Length: 296
Image (cartoon, rainbow, N blue to C red; front, side):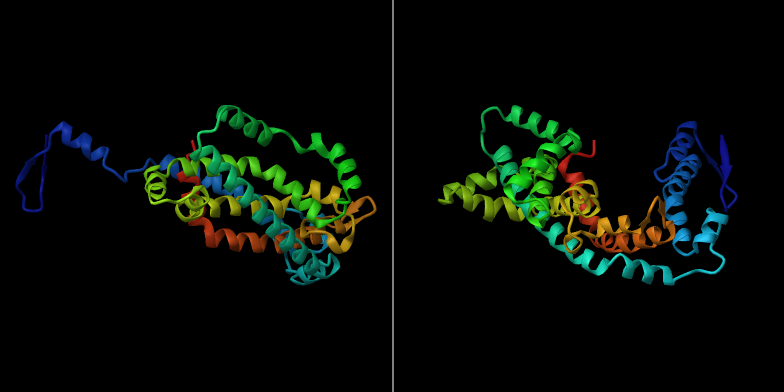
């Protein structure tokens, strides 16, 4: 029932005080640390092994695929950069990703504004359509898209690939941005309309400045998806001078064998730009996802 202080006087400690002390904020169960460390090790394991593979020779990788590189081969990165012509690939990726981000931001911004701020009929039907569109696998559309794009002259063009990316990535971006715009009070719109503002002025002068973090979030998600996409780029781009950098990994195939050392080195070169971009924008990305209400 009691404990001694530094002065030697007895202090009565009740059971309720002990309970409050045990439940004090900041007291985290050690099992949580064990689980977090296990998750970090699980997620970082493949990345570390990929770095080890990029610093080995083919013979070292075959002899000891999981071990440390005995003599790091930093020249593998230069060989991968040169052999896969990654400089041209990065330039093509900048064009494709930039065009996709602009297209998705415009389409999703207008659609989300209409669904969030206007009283559209059958808004639930639009929501269901966007949800289904986001869930359908792209393999369903490959064959009809191939013949349609060939007839329209869009096959083997970067603008054709950008249009496909905008169509496939806009539904999810619209849902995310709509959730963000709904949280903006309508009082701002009403005040602007009383002052004589039209619908476009309300959109560009009131909603867009407030919804800017949401646009930044969908831009980052769209850029990551378009930059890492492989299937559509491999199907609809055939000219080597138009290929994005994601196809560079495919150039290390030699007959029926793969050069996994150069593939790992090229993967790290491909990873770096998006890794740096995510580090710069991670706070705004997390804030935008949290504000959208899609985190559950």
